[in-house]
Structures are given as C-alpha cells and as structure tokens.
Image (cartoon, rainbow, N blue to C red; front, side):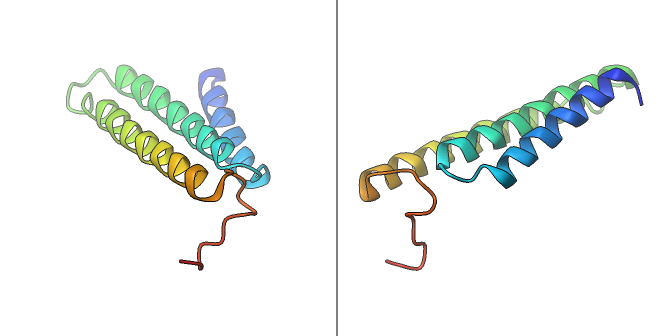
Length: 98
C-alpha cells in the first residue's frame, strides 16, 4: 500500500472511529461525517488523476455536491434540535417522543 493510500484510508478510519466512539454531541458527529466525506473526495480525485481518463472526472464533483447537501441538512437539524431541546447532546434527544 502506498503512503498516499495509507493516509486517506487512515483519515477515513479515524473519522469512522470518531463517529463510533465520540457520540456526545450532534456537532461532533457531523464533523466526523464531514471528515470522512473529505477523505473520500480527495481519494476519489486522486484516483481519477491516476487513471488519466475523463469519464470518471465528474464523480468527485458529484460527491462534493452530495457532501454539501448533507452538511446543510445536518446543520439545519442541529439548529432545530438546539432550538427545541436547548442542547445538542445526543443523550438528551428522545427520537420516539413527538
């Protein structure tokens, strides 16, 4: 495994580990998801540059667009939960309560 592949694999795994083990606040979970998406974007961009083809060049832009949509939805949910519950702690949120 090359050092570049190891770097992006470890970036993704660190984001996944942060998402799995650090579940105190909604903001920290969103930041871990953004870190994972950023590592996927950079890895996919480097992969298309290594292949020297233009047929895969749209894939990183699509991933970036979906990542922006995911970030805006996550921030909207963060603002909505902070307004209704007064906090963004995940232990205080009861999803079964209306």
